[in-house]
Image (cartoon, rainbow, N blue to C red; front, side):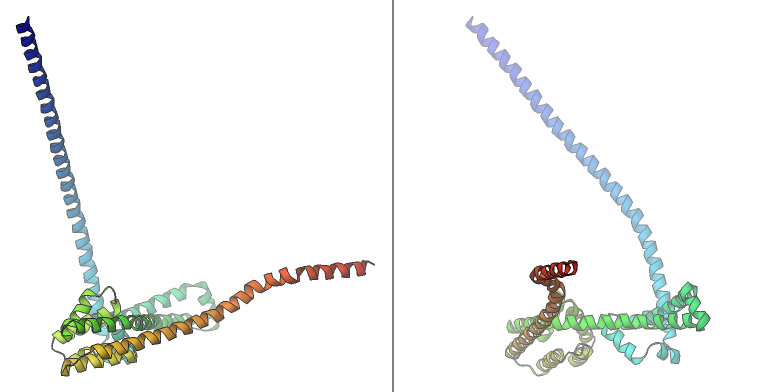
Length: 326
């Protein structure tokens, strides 16, 4: 009996081991099958994406080529218009200064597009105003008024846009100047040269001071091409009508030529700039309080009169009505 029970236990143990082995094999096979399915799905998705990207890249490449061709043709047309006396009439000296100070990287291309936009916009607005019913009625009383309005607006709108862009850049330069002075003082204090300092500011801090960073990029490129430090910084010093910025540029040129410490002059200059900005903010707050006083008088005075003198006026009206009725 004991031998039979031992054999039975061994048989059941072998069966249990076999079942456990089958279960483990099934689990391993299921896991391996899932991995293979995921790998095949992933490869299919990647192939589909690559095929789609190839098709989409071909279309944008063709569209980019057409856009580049249009740009090249427009630029060559503007370049032909800029030559001779006709070009000087299309782009005066004041307009050239505005284009130079507007922050474009390629100034010659910007001038060509400016002239092209003037001519194209003038022609478009002349045609548009000639088709409008209101200007057609005005043409009956004043001949060629639509031509005059279209030409005047088409001629002046690009210039007004440039003037607005330049004024916004001047305001942003004035706001970025204190941080630029602090960065100069910090980088000069750690022992960097002037060239390394300007390179670090225009590369690492371009997102913090975008307008100043773009101008420094142009200045650094001009200096690398062989211009002197004074010539490369002339655009920044004279293009924004900012005396503080011109002083900083002169200080950079002096330190680059003759050497010397900049920490103490820059510290005093930064303190003066912060004090100046504090005074400007106080002036803005004073103007804002005066404006808000007018708004409060216009909005709150009627309500205050109704609350304070409303009962008196009601009593007066009642008394007058009783007297009139009596």
